[in-house]
Length: 114
Image 1: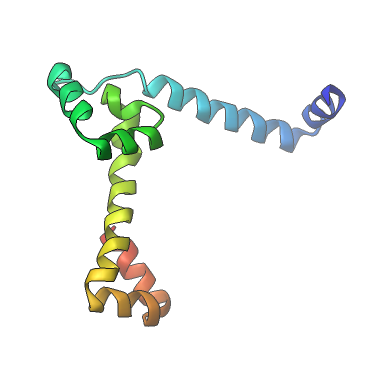
Image 2 (image 1 turned 90 degrees about the vertical axis):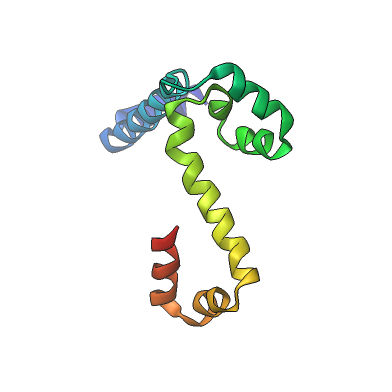
């Protein structure tokens, strides 16, 4: 296994991809610990303890939501919007038709709303 890892680093393209991957992980890990200023952390922690939905979303963000960090605000709104749009396609027939029969145009329109 170690030999395979060493051979992977001998190929420049693979080595670059591995460095970019670990660089992205490092940036995310650092951004989880940078809090957003102006947020009452005690009130935020109390709100998170009350709602099971917040705890579920917190699992998806790797704990970034509990710390209310830059990483949580980076991906969480998009994830929430995507989930809400999927639920709205069940409720509103127009969105359901747009999703199923709209083809590429319908998909792009729903994606732009997300």
